[in-house]
Length: 64
Image (cartoon, rainbow, N blue to C red; front, top):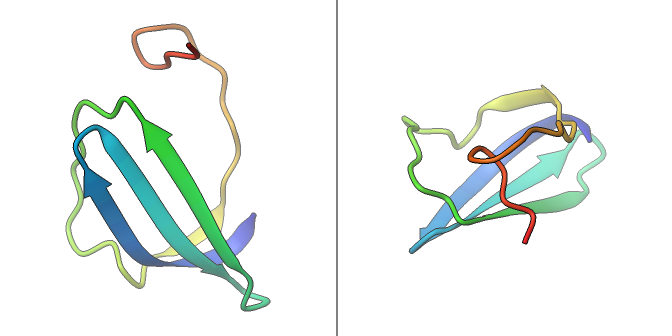
């Protein structure tokens, strides 16, 4: 995904869902599980120029 805008960030317990809209007006949702903490300040409307998956070792990623 590239050139998207964050529409909403939803958090429930240790799950976070980021709802975005691409430059082509396509709806995109990314879900994160096992979230320990999140820091944000009014992310709605923020432009994301690109998102990619990065591989890392625990404790930053738990692939169970």
